[in-house]
Length: 268
Image (cartoon, rainbow, N blue to C red):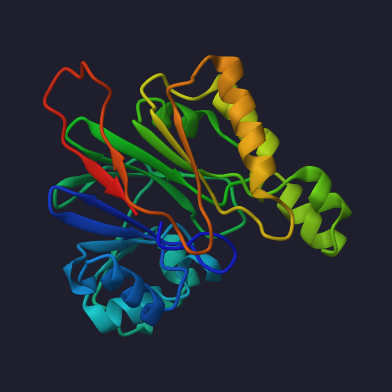
C-alpha cells in the first residue's frame, strides 16, 4: 500500500515484471514520489485500475495517466463520473464486472460491489497460482465477492469504522447514516464476521485497509480481527494494518503443496 485512508488510497501490485496500481487517491506527484522511493519507475506501470470515482481513490488518476503515459482501467460508470471523455489521458479501458482481462502477467477479474458510486469495483488479481483480492469502499459483503475471494492467497479489505465511535463522533447524522448504510462502508464488526465465517482456507495474509482516523482506532481493528481469527482457529494467517503512509512490500504466494509451481505477487 502506497497510501490508505481518507487522505488517499493506492496499492502497488507486482508480479513477474508486471506492475499495476489499484486506485490513484493521492496526487500524481505524491504517487510518483512514493513509487520512486520504492525503486519503481512510474512509467513502468502497465495500468492503473480505478475502483470508483471518489476523490480518495481517483484524485490523481487523470494527471498520473497524462504525466507518465499509463492507461487507466475501470467501469463505464467511473469513466463517466470522472469526466474522462475530454480529459487528456493515455487511454481508458472499460472493465465489465466478472469479465476477466489480461494485463501483462496479471489476470484481472473485476467484481461489482455495493457502494454509493457509479459502477464501483473490487478486484481479484492472479498470476499463476498466486492471487489477491482487493476491496475497499463497500457497504456490505455480497455472496459473490466472498466466493470470489475464497480462493485468494491474500485479501486486502477495508475495516473502516467502529460503530460506537462513529455514532458518538462529530460527523453530521446524514454522513453517519451514509457510512452505516448498505452502500457505505464496512465496520470492524463486519470484518470480524467475515474472518470468522467467510475467509477462504487458502488465505494466508489479510490486510485491513481504509481505517478511519476519526471513527476507528488501529487497536480496535486488530483486536476484532485477531479474535475472529482465533475463533476460526486460523493462527497461521498473517494480519497487517495499513496507515496513511502505506505498508512495506507483502509477498503473496500459495501455501505449501500448491499443485503447480507458484508465481509470486507483491503488494506495496
